[in-house]
Length: 386
Image (cartoon, rainbow, N blue to C red):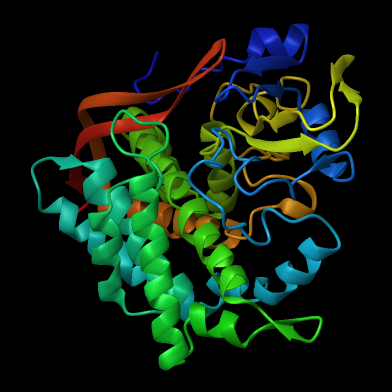
C-alpha cells in the first residue's frame, strides 16, 4: 500500500447496516454511512437540526469549551439563509482575478522557500503557513497577521494528546474579541468591520453574532485545509506520474482538485440533533439524540463512485460530500478550491518530484472505526523542476 493511501474503514459497516456508533463524552452519536442516507438526512433539517445547543453538532462535541453559536453553521432555515446571505458574497471573493493573483504569489513564494531546503516538515512548515497566509486574503487583513495564527499550531481547539482543550480555545476567543474591539474603534474593509456594519432584517449583527461568524471562519477552515494540502503533497510524492500528467494535461486540473478532496475527505463527519423520534436505516433515533453525517464514508460508496478507493484524476461524475450537502454546504469551499487549484498549478510549474523521508500518521478513533485523516508530521524533500 502506498504511504499516502487513506484506507476506507467504513466499508463493511456501510454495506451491512449503513450505520456506526460512537460514545462521545457520554452523548452518543449514530454515524450515517451511505451516500444516499447522508444526503437525505442533511436535507431533512426539520428532523435533524443544526440549531441545537452551541457546540453539540460538532463531533467531538464542543459544548464544554464553547458557548458562542457559530453562524450560520449552527442555524437552521429560515435564519440560516438570512445570515448566510450576509457573508455569501464575501466568501465568493476568491473567484476574483486579483484575489487569485495574490494567492498565487503566496503559494509560489512558499514553494520557492521549501525548494531551498534539504528536508521539509509539511504540516508545520508548508501546510500551516499556506493556510494561515491565505486566510489573510479571505479576511482582507495584513499578511503579517498570519504569523500570529501560525504560532498557535495546527489546531485551535486541541493540544497534543487532548481531543478538546478549553485553554487553547480561549486563545482564539480572546484574539477575536480583541480584533472586534479594534474594528469598532477603527473600522475598515476587513471582514470584522464588514460584519459590524451588516444587518439582518433591519438589525445590525450583535457582537456575539460577529464573534460566531469569526470563530467558524477560523476553526472551520484550519484543520481541513491543512489536511487537504498535506495529503495532496504526500499523494504526489507517491504518484510522480500524476504530477507529470497534470503538467501535460492542465485542462483536468479542476477535476483533479475535486477528486483529491473527495478521496481525502479532510473532515470525517458533522453532527445533527434529532428534533423528534424517528429512524435512520430502520434504526430508531430518539428525539434530542445525535447523528453524524459521515462525509468520508459517503465519498467511498461504491454504489455512487466507480473505483472509490482510487484517485481518478479526471473523474467525470463526482458528487462528493467533502463540503457538505444541502443548505449547509461549506462557505469556505470556494476559498479551498482556489487554494488547491493554484497549489497544483504551482507544483507542476516548479516541482519535478517529491520524496517522503518519514511520517507519523494521524489516526482518528471513531468507535469501531480507526480512520487515517492525514499526518501529525511528514518530512519530504522537494526537487526543483529547473
